[in-house]
Image (cartoon, rainbow, N blue to C red):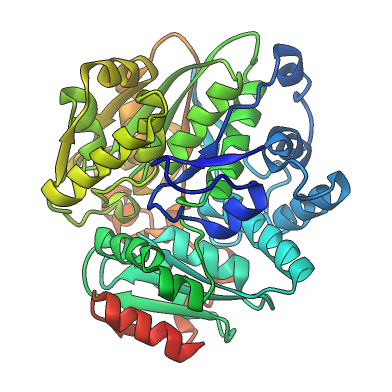
Length: 460
């Protein structure tokens, strides 16, 4: 399996190289040169299997020869051993044809654990084999950072620096990043919003001299391995509801487009998905794009669903690559327009293809709070604001196929918003009960590339 850049000017890589590289050297994102296929029989055979075995069967064609079968199975087993539910990503019914896919049973209570725990084990195995050490730099709107720090803390082959927007993540999210004591993990509070942090990470990758000096690697969803790992739970959910004999729809609360692009990957592999529904909060660039064809940045408004407070959805570039018949030059031009003008307009053909695959909706702050309250009253489930955005949009987009909404985080990560909505203050699980008492360790920095690069090099 070979991997190519969405902008067409970077060398082709194998899986291991693409995983360790993250962002392509031409500024693009790596995608498979072709989509592996699973037949209806292959998909049907996943029914009743442990999550780890489904993960192996779905991901192995993409991983190819990077790890032996035995090695890859061991990596997967280690990755999910710390999850607190035997099903890893269990399904919960909330209506006659409505389901929640709970993705918050990992160590940091968010869906990012599903991919990040796996990536941590893959990085460690690969780097130990080669004797290399890398510097991981990532940006987070809240959950990616804590999941990355948890996955890589104490590992011998990596140093991790996570940029998060100062004052724009929940207290639980912040403390999960700032309380680990291992010397190889570092939380950096950056002045600005998530898009500021994400742009700085991309600028570091595009500063090739710095990139090579510190052996830079990335674990944001710019890293293909992240998206691949997330595709697995679309298979487990759909098969549990009768796939491939019937189609299943998914609603995904998303800001950076990675989680819903994972659903698109599953569909390209042959999973019979009916509709993929993009759910956005008030920072609704993706919803507006589907409505008008204009992809136009507006200011980021802080919300009670902070992990979705994003205007530059990195993984949308991967979808655009397919929408434009994998023409790297066309994607490079669109990304230049977005950087220079803050917007671009889809061609009519690309917009038609987008609408053929996706639906979308949005939820305001008031609608999100009302949805949390409604779900608590009608189902007994206390959900986080991001999930509430999803269930509200899912109800409006519902067709005849079963609808699965991705529950991306535990309600206890956002206790203030949940309590405001329904009067219930969700508790952290016992293993995290002392989180508010643990001492914090962080560095606050301006949103300037030179200051960040100086700090990182001075710390290594």
